[in-house]
Length: 293
Image (cartoon, rainbow, N blue to C red; front, side):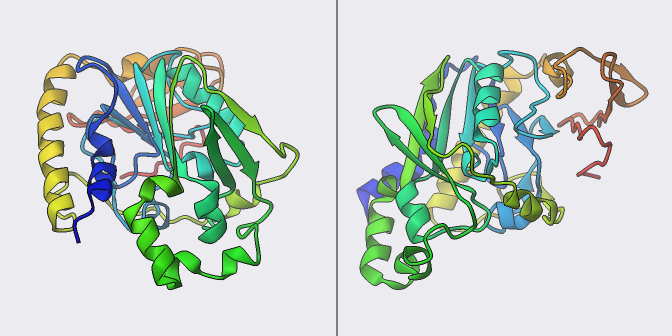
């Protein structure tokens, strides 16, 4: 059955409020990055963190920690953080980093209602947006509500399944910000470090270079058309772009020097691998363990 609200929801990725010349970062980009984004940032490639989809590497990419982004201050005109905030054990540091590297941006997550009815063990936050403020509750464990969380209402109850399918906006947070991110943490003392154990066990997944292997149907076709359009525009926009010009040490935000395939911080004595690929560059964590061959 055709649902106009479902169509509008699918089209949200095509409506990014940034000029054609603006530089856009996609944080936690995963297997289906926003077509409008110019640079990708991700820490994990395990398929469990991207609904089984291989990670996309079709444009300049950096591997790093979203809580310690390896970019200069205000390097981007717009920052997209879609379905990543709910994974962050320290939401304050992450939100500060978004506001530091970007001039404006967009945050999307499952909302607290969705998380209560269908909890994910890779999510450590419950989030709602009211009066343009992000309200954040930290989960003490993967299933915060043992009653609602184990009923399986969104999976097993047909009425709830249909409602979620027809009204996806009722189960998600969509938050646009400029200069400042307004948020409130309700239980800052709660320790969400249990999520890091799940992250550490994440395997390095496959990567893909285009959308050609994505699922069929009108959504798949639309995604490919949109991707082709933005790929064409991106080539012109990034024709003279050097990703190393916006990189900074993730620890001290200091200047990185390049030497024999390494990016070296003159202040911290950390070095980061750089891949001089004509299509994308990959920088890795300070421990030097690369997540891409």
